[in-house]
Amino acid sequence: CQGRAMSSFVESLDARLAREQRGSLDATLLLAREQCDSLDPDAVSYVDALLLAQQQRSSLPPLLDNCSSLPPLLDKVSAQWLHHRESFAPALSDISEQKCKRWRLEVERQEVKRLRWSIDAFGTGFGLAEASTLTMLMDCGLTNGLSHIRLGGCYLGDDGLRPIVASLARVPRLRTLGLAHNGLGDGSIQALAEALSANPGRVLPALQRLWLFGNDISDEGVISLTKLFEAGELPRLAKLGLGANRIGDAGVQALARCGRTALGAVDTLGLRENPRISTAGVDALAAALESGAFASLKTLWLPAAHEWHGGIAAACREREVTLICA
Image 1 (cartoon, rainbow, N blue to C red):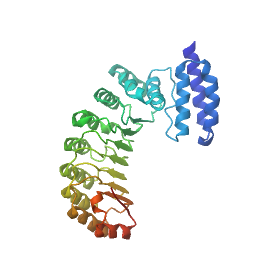
Image 2: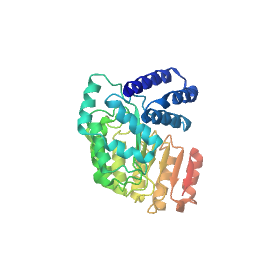
Image 3: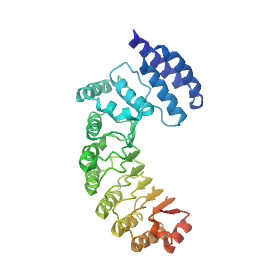
Image 4: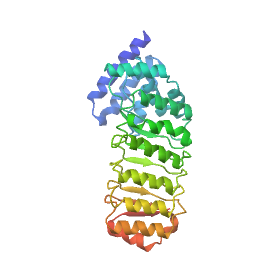
């Protein structure tokens, strides 16, 4: 009986939210919160998560029926992530291969609407087990609507990330890939290059933000990335974060050359906290900017040592690019 009540409640809430404008969601949700107190704790947590998301102006968790097979877990993951962050990874790890296969059948039968969701696991217990689960979801075709993957601070390493990268063709709508502080080296960049090269133009076509800050990527990895860009991959990329790695002049010079023929949509380029970058690398960037490279660039981050580099400062002023040296 309680399950039927929960199902009915969520269905009615879903319908009401679909009719409301975003500005009036708070009132609708507060009213729903009062009505769900008599139901089980999952209903209360569900609405609390929606309220919190609205207050933080973040994306709402999936409005799905908590009592059918596919929605409950993904809905639970989203609610727990917003309400109790430490519960996110354990909830995700509850997904089994058998569940994935059953959900896939439901998607094929169009019994479940296309999911629109994101994973934001920065600094949580998201580890190798959760990475394996995410790969299962991808391989079962359940991630078409996945828009953001933020795994900063999870320290997956090259081996932990490799299966996720290999399945990126399954997330065609992904706009953000955040992999900061994951102990990644050039091996991860090579894995990404292999994934994109295997299906030219079909892997991450919508990606706008690629965050690789705080890893162990060297010039070799950056050069591999530039080859991808020059081949026309990641055409919508707008923000590229490469700060706090092991990048030197060779990597920066490769980016400068690449910026003349590719990376036309990039508005933010982050290279701060890369002490191996010397005047030679910054000279190459300045010359590239003067020649019209990086047509959309608005913000450039460089190591603090280059704050007084006259060439790059002048080139940024001429192009109205904000230069931040840190």
